[in-house]
Amino acid sequence: MRLWSLHPKYLDAKGLIALWREALLAKHVLEGKTRGYRNHPQLLRFREAADPLAAINYYLSEVYFEAEKRGYSFDRDKIDWNFKPMKIPVHTGQIKYERQHLLQKLNLRDPAAAIRLMSEKELAVHPIFEPVPGCIEEWKITKP
Image (cartoon, rainbow, N blue to C red; front, side):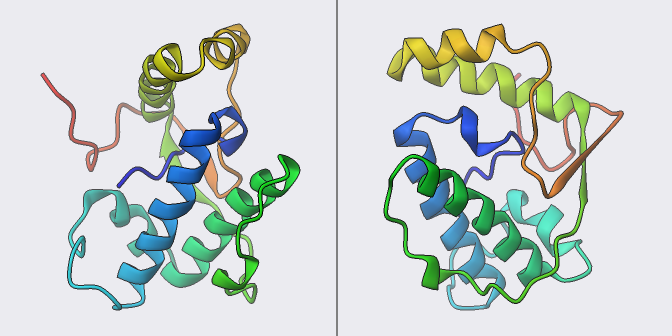
């Protein structure tokens, strides 16, 4: 499960579709509708939000809006639109890590998108996240 901290506008088509599916899975986990993935580390920051379901629905809404901009037909009925926007902190080290990870993926799948991403001096994050100083998030498992 990968729930990017970066704004979904940086994802290629394959990445955006995967994000939609992963965020829907996260929503089902938070709703208690699945047995698997219940302890997935990516869910920690949503579980720690004041209202975890509102947080994941807000997250999904921004993914939906990006898909809509691109002409994709994601099902808006999968989102509970009765949420209030909120902020969840994300460490700047996590943002840097995700930038590099996404660049690796884009270099293989969509080199033009990788070039656009490299040209960005400062990346936007998903609107639910508020960058704060710090290293890679503790919940992020990285390879040595």
